[in-house]
Length: 347
Image (tube, helix red, strand yellow):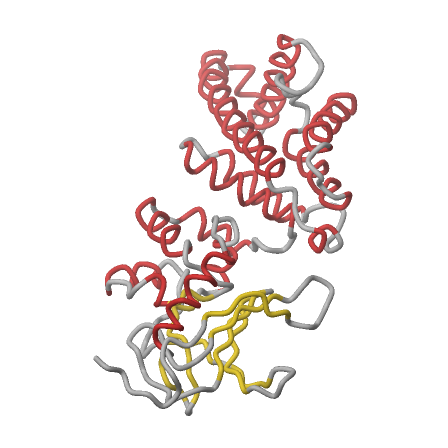
């Protein structure tokens, strides 16, 4: 068993070494695969004969089967050979299917980590190994993943937890497991417009009532109610120019305080004499699950800036970035005002 675990460690490490993955993330990955793969030596990666790998997997399955059958009563197994035969014939295929499902999830998770090895910040945070409680719950879900899309979903969960431990609580795992395909597809579509934990309506458009209700019922979206907004902050640039400022992670959008503030449906809402952006808000569970879905924050910021420029034509719209390790926002793009301050819209 120790030798097989060592082979797995070398195998997973070898797959990830050339990807730029950092030491602490590598440590969590290797420990997770050692825990979840156990004695299985992967035929694709481990430098051992395929027949030995197959025998090893079958042997481990039989050990589990014998342990489980022991609970049925040793005496009955001895006195009722037909019962023992039926138990073995029914239990062994089930064990092998569960092992096959889990193996497929782990394969996909390795690929995910190879393509997205994690950031420098993620590498410096978190423990050397994943939490046993997470791994225990995750293993049960992975063993039941018979569908390819579901396997991919669980693979992304594991890879994300390796990069950033603590993202997937037992509650989040339960919601992932309970998501029906249509709701999962809807959530993935909506999260294509995610900017941190909010979804600007200017990008996603208004959700149909039924769609919003499904996401709320699934625990992914905060009840829209009368509507949520992302307020702007008031500040001045180095030259004393007043700005309305919105922050989305390391990116920011600013509008100069020029002209009259006007409401534009779905783009700008006036709140306490300040412009605000109408949004949908993800729950903590929704934000955790959204972290495994692809999106392009830079592109979305660009799109939202253009929408704001149309809604605030007298303002200069600026884009800012906050470089890692600094506290100074740097301007890198500008959209000039579409009409002079104080002029009226000719339309």
